[in-house]
Length: 123
Image 1 (cartoon, rainbow, N blue to C red):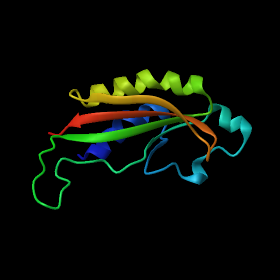
Image 2: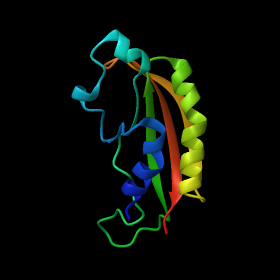
Image 3: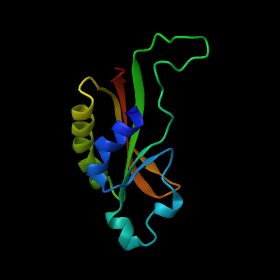
């Protein structure tokens, strides 16, 4: 399995198949205010930095660096998702180290977001 497959498998049970890579597709965003109230998603927005990601041969990196963005209509929902995301990642990747955890707001899609970054040891 790949790191992407493992991440999706760990996070999908938390969010009912709303785990996206790259960005949240615009056709998946809530269309009405009523839908917006209950809508949540997880996005892994950046290319995962891999240990062998170099044009000069072997890299001295021994970990993947992963960013996970959690989206919801309000800050309370985003905050409530933190612990389940932490637990899911740390259960799937026992040697994962959390690097960053900070709140944000995405003005383009009008959603609160939590940016969570991990360093995950390569196997």
